[in-house]
Length: 199
Picture 1: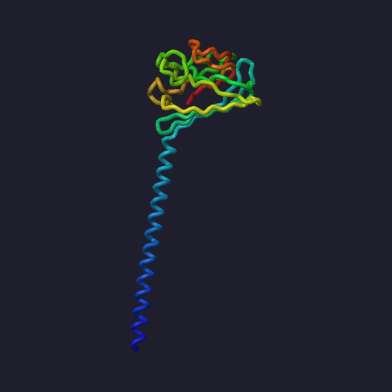
Picture 2 (picture 1 turned 90 degrees about the horizontal axis):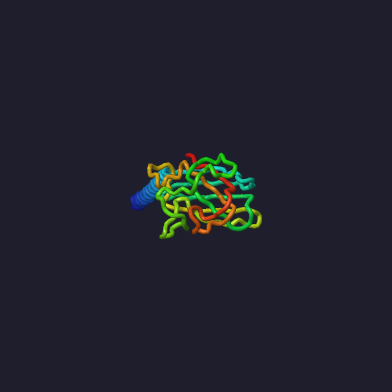
């Protein structure tokens, strides 16, 4: 007879332990779900605050230079990514110009470099001054392919600051190299590829 109460007590203890374990597992699962939901919310917020525009580059000055350029704004900074084909091997200059107008066969309809702060032409970051459009030079390989990656907090996409807003401007690739000295454009030669930045 003594065995029956002991058996019942053992079963009761086991059930209690089992319930505690089940409760712990349920709490852990709830925490995991909460973390996953928070991560998903953060990711959605990041996507909502990210702005991106992308365009095709078209040949100019009887060149065969084509490409794609994109601008992505996130966390107060703009990343430019561009890729090109049909270039001659070696260095080429790339700039942002003041007008999103690629209608001229030689690309001159884009006007001069984008220079909203009226600085002299120079290398990006130069203490002596530089244009907001003075991106610099990049290298094309023997197959004529080239790529540019550039990031700055001095640009924005469609903001209210005319000294930062790149919308309404153009991207120009030049046949030659920017010497960072000659005024007002760096003596970079013919404009061989163009795209207008229109949101």
